Length: 320
Image (cartoon, rainbow, N blue to C red; front, side, top):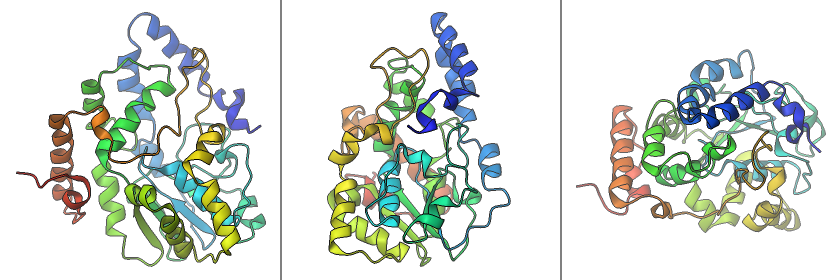
């Protein structure tokens, strides 16, 4: 079993979880989570150091999604294409570096075993960082998935607080305030999206939409293989398609899911592969809340000077 799933993962974080467990008892856990934990994860300071001194080369395939945007599907797809449908691992982070993560037990960025032994001589690197912190080289490959931020909100509500044993601690309104603040992990959805959208015409970059993955998984896998310059036989392609299906990944949740948190009640663990759907943000958000997110993101994209087609992609009707 991967070290990521075992106690060494918590060698640095166990004191933090112990403190949070104690704060739950006196009603201060939510404030501690908002003011201390969330800003610590994927902060600009951490992101700036993650790839410090690293120069990407042709074997690197960067999976650079914003959190809760289909990142695990993308990691699995790239990993399976890299290994021609034969990738095996205890946990995805035993084979995929995630340089800005503060967790231990993840394969280091400088470990060259994956690309040295893979049949395609490629390997995948995960990052949630914005383009400012991603080292660019025209010989490497960069793939990002863009998801409707309303759906990102819903997925994050069901996942991020639960990782720390805070299921039910936040109302939808409270989490929406966090989501649209500078304290949300990985920062601004608009900044992340605008950055990679500006790269979209580079031949070594692929921007793909989450809705496209759901509606046309076969075509999405082919587009990823094409930008990676990997030719697949029909048998290899079908094996990759099966291993990247919702049913397969749900059945292998432990290979992608978060670690088991100390002191967390049995059954309280966050679910990584939840539904695999698109267009369901109204399960949590009312029309006014969805409109709030839409207008906020449109304002931010305009402020950034981005021509990302937000209205066409994510709004049911044009804003008034």
